[in-house]
Length: 271
View 1 (cartoon, rainbow, N blue to C red):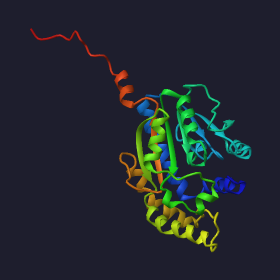
View 2: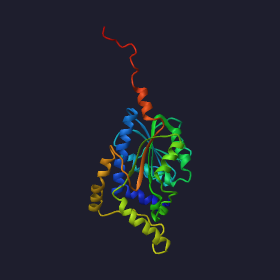
View 3: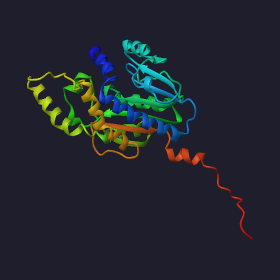
View 4: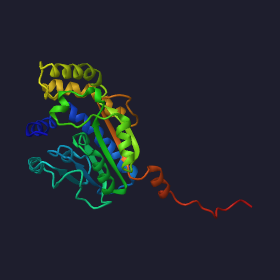
């Protein structure tokens, strides 16, 4: 991304309803999946493409939180914001030992990578046997617009494309849902129109959609969309601007079977 876009995201993630909702969904899924994994105490959580550290500095539970970021200025900004453990690197060649991570976050990262398959394979390698990947990506190629151009996206994902690449990397899908359903109908109207206007030279062909509203409207937008976070605690959404997925290294059912006590073959019978 351009320096301007990095700075804008760092500023917005402290203020925008979009980032507030996204964090609530991610933190709820992350907490639930760690519990399901049986991870106790101090899980190792790696945020790939951590940016200015807005996710790691707000983790609602204790963890060994590691941020990986390619942009040096973002690394410095994340340090200023209080991220203690930072690594400069890229998602295609992770500087982590195989099996060393309990959870890996890739929050709106994969769409920036020309080789997203290598990044998924590396995440699979670095995860522990009980570990999982939690990722979000922009959905629906038909919504491609100047917003995607502004943030140097390589693609927007179709659901079968995302699931296929995860399966090819060796993952087993645990949860998959669309998100940001409330904003989806409006985006279906606005983004194709913006794309056409940009092609006609009437509008900026690299104008992103992120705008900070007055505080009262930001709070209202969050209140209107908060139902999604509640819904996604137990269910999935059938449409939305983004896809959210939890992909495990080993199927959860297999992990659960290994934790179950062995059957008592010498059980007593009444006589």
